[in-house]
Image (cartoon, rainbow, N blue to C red; front, side):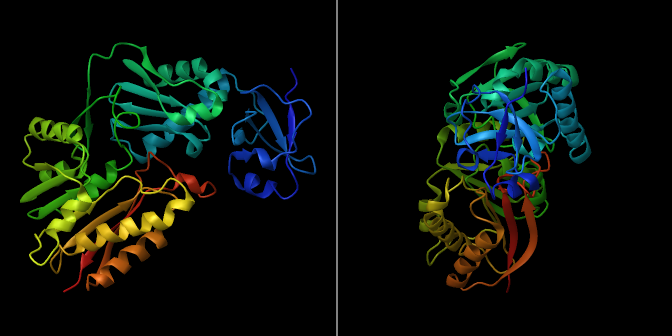
Length: 392
């Protein structure tokens, strides 16, 4: 069967030629007869020059997801080559990790596919109709290359609905008898792969957990938005003299306490709205910490909400800085690609000015390298962070 050819409108090819895989409906000259959802199509520019091939969808905002810049077919060999390349990259950048992201969608040239490994269990998440139609070939390749004892599908995300896919979650291979025990930098975490956030937990901070912990020995540490104790437990393992983790979810804190016990680590976890807690403890008789960690969930999902998000970021930084003495350290993170490094840092500095404190940059942070960044795809660079020291 001949591959359908779709043509871009004038002026729409440069972004695609530079490497971005998303082609929007408005960027295409609509074909007289549209291919079925998930069809493999070829994309050309306004002068009929080849740009790539990928999966088509009639009603999704993203009309085509480019998967290759060659005239490939999505057969078993194609998927094996793509997956092998992703696995080879992980071996190069995180050779010691036993739990990590193996395939990161657009950043690995497989838009709509995420695969995480938690020790001997794989968790797969599909958000594109074309990927869904080839899931058996993908699972076969993953099984051959990684030899998992269990494979779980976590297709319980709303983004599937944009491509007409139903939500689902199940065990596809092997047996899952309960939470999986995963080692992250030598710290053991019990992770519920069927109910946990994303595919179970947040793997993109794995390297940063260790980097921040390097500054926590013999320090009083406050970990805000601790979730299941990621930064807190790494700080405790590094020899912090005191560790307090805050989170609004009592369920997450129950798991954090269990993780502390399992690792024989000492940390205190308190259920609280972080904004309220910081406001209460940052007044005239502020409680003092040597290291404050801010790792909140994203405050913004679109550009329209950025101004409100920045006000939220400024408030928590103003309150957090008041807890730090001269020489104190602030490790702070933002996980929205709508707020870039400069805008995030400007917001922090505005808060520092209001707190009458001057900050010195000690370190910059990014997402762990198993979540790679493709500069041509700005959406792949979302996590950024800074380690800042309060000057005397």
